[in-house]
Structures are given as structure tokens and as C-alpha cells.
Length: 269
Length: 227
Image 1 (tube, rainbow over the protein chains, first blue to last red):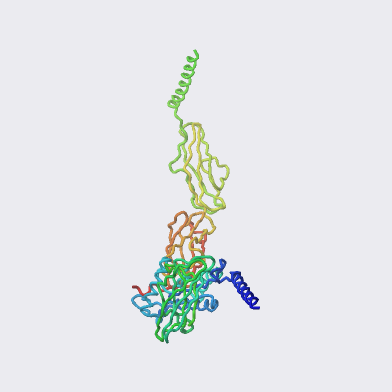
Image 2 (cartoon, one colour):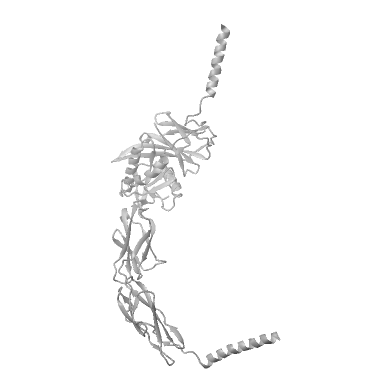
């Protein structure tokens, strides 16, 4: 009787082991599945100024509002609000600080260097890094008309990077941030950076804003990821003023030189 | 023996050639002499199907008659067209045509220089804006080159560029039929902007040829926190 019971247990264990080994790797999000992939979540980054009386920036933001509404959850839109000086008059955008202002300018300069035919200006919009540049606007729809075809193309593309952010509050106004990065489709992950963009949602007149309140730039270096594996990037702890407490963060996986964005994801707090 | 015959034949041949040269020297050829003005026409700019009179003043240095053989690269001569004065009917199609004459006598012939006749074309110049492409997008402060091709049978006097119906520039300078304009995109072009090119023919009679395209101009505020 005891022998029968022991052999039943042994058989059950054997069955379990075999069952585990035979688990099909058909989950498209499983890094160990050589055919795994995910969809691209494009990142739209806009350099704008809302203090200048010309309506171009408002037009651009209205276009981006339309796109964000139309592709809700499928794209990420963030705004870097810049101060600008024209003919010795400074137009001070309220949604930046001296610290962010410098980083925004450096990031824009990096992007402009890939498209030097038009110098630094606002509104200046980039799709997946410097991959595509859209400068200026001539009405509330113009930017949408220009971006949408490129956006649809990106949305239809397979993507081989998967991001899993983890954010926890370590105090009232502090956040602990990390993100898992997996490479899908039998690929390795090399020379990557993780940019973290903390955004605060605001409303100004008829515009819904996704203002960047903190930018981790240059992005954090991502360790080499072996085929079928993942890595976890520890970003650390960030403390915010109450008025600047972000609503969420966009995590963007970029090339090492930060010029191209491969994948992005938004995590709300 | 054979060698002697060969040498003999050679000598005879040499003698014959020498004789011809000598005859030329003794009796030089005297083809007709043409007035330095060449072909004189009653008008050198005419409408299609107009008739003009053309004449050549030729003198014959030898006794005997002269023959006049009139030629043209278009249109037709009213018969008889074998005298020093003829009538030429301009063709229907405008453009640049030429009339000339070959005058001959018993001693030889001489061809006059070609006289150019401009037959006015009533058609409009053909104009095409080659650059930028219709629907192109630019932003304020950008500098662009507008390239316009313009052609007309009578030539093109000048090409004008209008931006939103406002004259921007005009030029008569062209290279291989392409007229170039440098345009700086300005704030007043923001939105849909119409570029129109207008070509004027070199005859003051035909209409103006035009072509137009639309470009889109985005407004920008250049610069930003210079540091």
C-alpha cells in the first residue's frame, strides 16, 4: 500500500517535470520564444513655448491633443516647454525650471543635429527620437496631417523590446523607479539607454498638456541583454515638490546616442 | 621598258594637272558678287501668313545671265521665285525662320548669309514650376530656390514670380531655359501659399503663360534660450 502511494507520487512528479518541459514557447511576449514580438508604442516629443503670442505652438499642441485622443494608449506624447528669446524679449514658459530648461535644450540640440536644415525653434516635434522631425504649424490640424501617416506606419511595425516599469512611493513625495527591459524575437540587446520622462498633466485653456517635469537625460545605460533574456534597470529614488509631483512617467528605450527611440511605455502613478 | 611607260604616263598626268592650274591662273573664275548687306527684307518680324519682300543685290562680273535660287527653312515663296526680288509667305506656326539665296553665273555660285525672320506666335509661353514640388512644406525663415522653365517660339523676354498674387521678383536670366529665384519664407506666407510664375514672350503680342503651385508654410519661432 505504501509502495503504491510512493510510486503514485513519483509518477506525479515525473508527469509534472515532463509537462513543464513540454510547455510550448508560443507566448509572443515570452523572450525565450524566438518568434516573440510586441507592438511599437511610438513616442512623440514636442518642444514648445506657450508664452509667445504667435499661435503656432497652440496649433501644434491642438494637433497633438487630437492624435493623443485618437490613439489613446497606443502612443505617448510629452512636451518640453522651452523659454525663448526673440529680439531681446524673453518669452518665459511657465512649465519649466532652470534645471529642466537646460536639459530640454541639450536634448533638442541633439535632435536638431540630425536635421540641421532647420535650426532650433518651436514648435519642434519629433517622432521616435530624431527619426522624424516636424517643425512649425499652420493650423490646428497641420501637424496631425503630417505626423499621422508616419505614426500609422510605426504602429503597424513589430517591435522587439518590451518594457516593464515598476514605480513605488517610498515616501509622500518620493518615488522608487526601476524598469525591466526584455529583448524579444531571438535578438540581443546592445548599446541601449533608458530615458525616463516624468510628466504632469495640466489643462491650459482648451489644451490638455503633458508637461515634462523631470527628465533623466542622458538616459541610463542598459546592460547587454542576451538572447531570450531581460535585465532590470534601477533608476533610483526621485523626490518632487508637491506642485511638481508627476502623474506618471514615460520610459523610452533609446539608442546609445539617444537619437533614436525604439520603444516607449507610460506608467501612471 | 615597262618602267619607261610608267614614267611617261606619270609625266603626262603631271602635265595635265599643271595645265588646269595654269588655266585657272590665266582665266580666274568670277562668280556673282553679293552686296555686303546680304538679303534685305521688308520686315523681319511678321505675323503668321504675312507676306514680306526679300531681295538681294548681286552683280555679275562676267557676261551672261545670273540665276537666283531662293531657300527658306519654313514658309513658302510666291512664284516666280527665281529673281533678285521675291515674296515670302510666313508659315502658320510662329518661331524663328531664315531666308537665303544662292546666286550663280557661268563661272560659279555664291550663297548669301541667312536672314532671320521672327514669325510672331500667338500661342502663350509654356511655363512650368519645376521646384519646389506642388504641396511641399516649408517653415518660416527657410530659403528655397524656385525653378521655372519657360519656352516660347519667339523666345521669352522675362519671367515673373508672384507669391500669393504679389510680385516677388522678375528675371530675364536663364540657363538652359530654367529661370531661378531665391525665396525666403516669411511670416506672411504661413498656411497655404500660392506660387505663380508668369512668362512674357519676346513679341509683345501673345498672352502671358503661367503656372502655379501651392506650398504649405509652417510658422515657427526660431532660436530659444540661447546658451
